[in-house]
Image 1 (cartoon, each protein chain N blue to C red):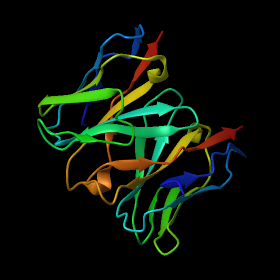
Image 2 (image 1 turned 60 degrees about the vertical axis):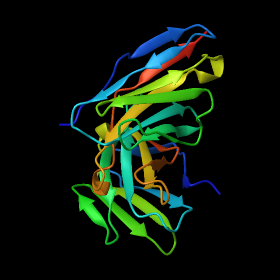
Image 3 (image 1 turned 90 degrees about the vertical axis):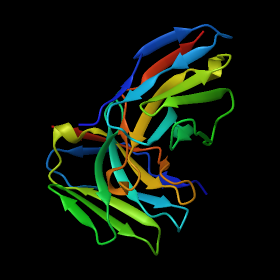
Image 4 (image 1 turned 45 degrees about the vertical axis):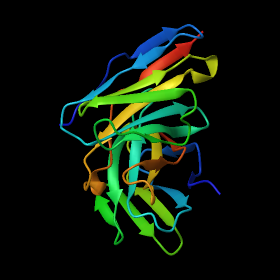
Length: 114
Length: 111
């Protein structure tokens, strides 16, 4: 089975800190995605990447950046954490051309910014 | 109009009941459709893809109506373990493999 691993399950950070959320997948997937999920708002796409060193903005990229130096790793960076970035962050990956299979998600990182 | 819309529920049904969830999507060029299941405080997991001709997986049946831009999920003989949030998901038409998620429909199956 594809495994998508997010480095932290729970994280508490202070306002203004630079925060790194790491995601690693072990099945050589080209596509990787970062979403955040908030009550009443559902999953919203932050950034995605279809290849190493490639990135595309999703619907809510403000306040975030990403890095994909290796195919298996896709990092989400909060440049200066704010309380409105408190959320559940979900990483996902997929293979191109496997539209019928959707995504595989990591187990999520619940980030609290205080 | 939101990209993917679902009735949030909650749907409270007794064990053994049949329950149906509906979903509409706004972009007629969308090509791939899915239902995901999400348990409380867990990540979403793929339940099933939705094909144009409709498809069934055990107690679960998915239907797609492209003309109406409407997707449905039918669960027969509900089990307690079916209690979860069901997310309707549509692949974006203009950005490769990115997916749009509905906000989910909550199902609680009671004894």
